Image (cartoon, rainbow, N blue to C red; front, side):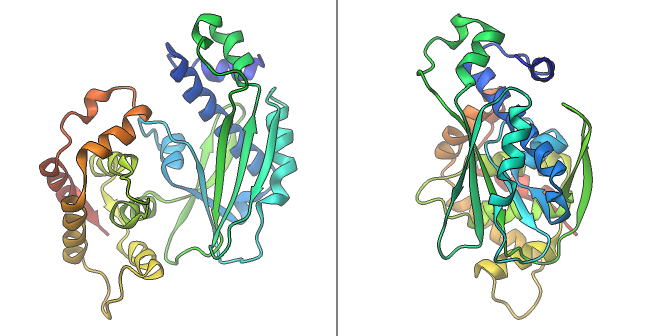
Length: 287
């Protein structure tokens, strides 16, 4: 195993196969960010979403995808131009990856996937065959990248720094705008009939650590998605009312079941109830 990867794995107290899978996924995410930085991607786009919160701000749950927003609309943008840079970057650290473009019609989201087949070998090298036992042969680890090519307005970005495997910079949404995006997901994410408990977990993290929410950016997102059509600006009182409606609709058991694989301490979910989230939303500070 590449020494830099081994050092990155040392940050994690891996005990189980799932621990190693989650750790290696996160390392792949950081290597992908490094490759994007080298290829000047962050001159045109900013990092946001749950993985940005995890990698840049210490969110205590694992996250699967890499989500980005262009700094200004560009309908002709394509992730394909960064495929070689991503393959080369991850290849330099011992990961043999494939870059797969995904074409979606009638959407402003540009998607691609990074897939590696070297996962099983790397886990055996680090943890031994007793840990990897039960992992299906040929199991792939997949990282999904998504870019919003028609971003809503009124957001601010900042440069954040990642120190491993080498120091590099990532342009990301500022925390109040990250929170606005998460609030929009909590209230209006269309995820078929399922509940995305990770959104609610992140809401609790924001309320407890960084409760400031940029109201103007949330309003821009809501207007773009058709969820707010009022003639007047979105107010804090209207925000609280809509949060309360989202709590009332929430299936708490489904939310817990969805997020549980991504947290290391399931007891952190023991308090979850509609009453708990009703209290949580009182901690949010619109700015």
